[in-house]
Image (cartoon, rainbow over all chains, first blue to last red; front, top):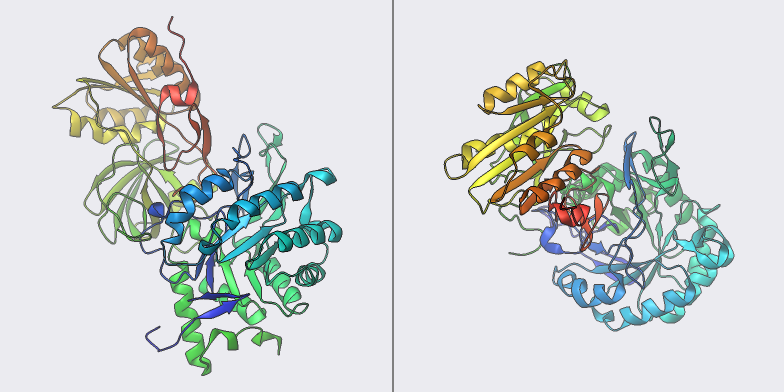
Length: 308
Length: 265
């Protein structure tokens, strides 16, 4: 409860959060002992690193390049695999007092089903599953799951069948229509959609006359993508009944408020935490200030308020 | 100690203020930063991500190892190479900065009685405090390599800070002609511990010291850095024992972990 006596508690697709600020996947270490001092203040939930069925070393070569007001990354889903996560990482994460959202990536539906089978054993420690559909679909020549309606539908349907708990779908901004893809996810049984993920870009090393990244393209995040993500949130929120979680470029407390006013029920913060571990706390103060100023008493009253 | 609580020696975000910014030669800067609150003394090789406070472009902090630290004051050396360091170099005294750190493991206390430190240009930074802190207990020899012409002010500055430092330059205009690896190999021998900080090709070359009887060679690796706390995995490198984060398990690694088994001849 804030000094103003305002609760920022909110419910997102079946998950009760103390605040609407979520740490995005791939930002904080899986070992909570490494989280910077004060960084849990204002945090409503924490997403895991993108997990896969088998451990992955990730991409070789250059993985991160700064761009104008942003960062390009090509990590390649480096992770220790779901078995290791459940045995070694989830127990400590679940002791943090914050809901843990497990981000899961996959190359085949069989992999996804098997990975969810492993996660099921620890379902009580997992508040929601965040289905990452920005990873490549091997059966379609590596095309991203989330950019074709058929493959998105097959992935969400398979996850829904294999996972009894709460299912969020983290959409790809490369999808041709975020509204339609959000609606499709809702139709397949998702409890919420996360809009969205990193935006494909690239960078060239002029001295070497080659792309910086071995995979040529990389995901752009950071303040540079905020207006794009805000537009995507607006479109998704106009298309679905289920909650929309805004994700992309939120770098200041005011950005989070804008996303909520555009229709997001909560926001994920990512790259901004590379430089400001106290952003969740300052975001909560901004939300409280705004609620008081407008004479409102809950975050829910702010959701979509800019839509008129 | 719970998660997200401040722990001594582990990274935290702090605001700081630029005390001075001095040129040391054409492209190098020596700056001092006063933190709003004290940090635990960083080990040699630990680093801070430094950026201008509240600015989103450039966005990321630049990883710099302190050249000195005392209480709330930290000093750094950096070379002006791109947008971020240009921006840092242009800031006036009093400018607000944001620092995340101390990050990484740093060099562990040496076990032997003889320590040989090998630096390439700005790689000298983490070694500047070592001579004064270990000098009485351990025999410390420092050898530095610079390209040559134009680096005289920097080399002189280092020589003032570390009396007896051995200087090497590619063009022979400063100290000995040649690289610091050759100089180091001439000095290396049994019972000596070797620490290196500089370009990767130089660090790789230090593996030849095993052939001279050195049993322990530690190198400080450099990578593009995102979060600095082990989350983004942007700085991961392949090692003998799997992928390791330069910002958490490093930047200081055993030479063999990073480069494999050395040739003994």
